[in-house]
Amino acid sequence: MSNLFTRIKDTIMADLHEAMDRKEEKNPIAHVNQYIRECEQEVKKIKQLMDKQYEIKHDIDRERNQAKMMVEKRKRQVQLAEDMQESELVEEARTELEQFEARVAHLNEMSDKAIKDLETLETKYIQMKQKLKDLYVKRLELRSRENVARTQQGMNKVLETELVSKSASKFAELESYIERIEQRVHSEYRLHTLDARFQELERKASQSN
Image 1 (tube, rainbow, N blue to C red):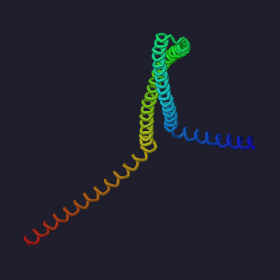
Image 2 (cartoon, one colour):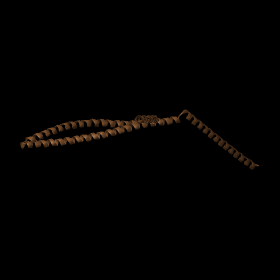
Image 3 (cartoon, rainbow, N blue to C red):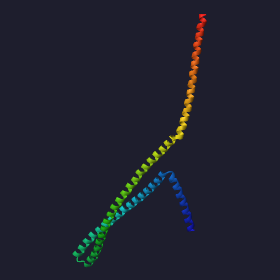
């Protein structure tokens, strides 16, 4: 049954990846956005782990401070037991004093290592954020290039020889049509002017008679 579920899951994931690949071919910026989102999630996870490391460092320091307090306390008790000549208490206090001193030494080493680890992690984290910022800049560059390419593609479509020739033909037809109208108007104007002149001439002729 588990193998069946695995095969079904693999088939679904394969179909999903194929669909994503087709989508990325149509819109490469979508692929970049998805990659950036994944990087952002990783940076967020790293930040959470670093915060946890700071908490661990805080816990180490707290344990070390408590151990140091016990060292000072047992030292006073050893001195007191020696002053009071309580040999048994002196031995017991000295045994615990050695244990606490060993604990402080170990916690000092842990604290030093934690500081170095945090310094390394901080450096790596800053590098990660810089890389993420570089991705933001790269996305801007790709968006700009994509927009310019699409704009040029549209311009080239308008400036194609076939479209230009069709436009030129349409303009030529329109210009010819306008010229015919202008010629007709001019002819009608001349005819109108000629008729008016003859009417005036006929009027003068009739008056002279």
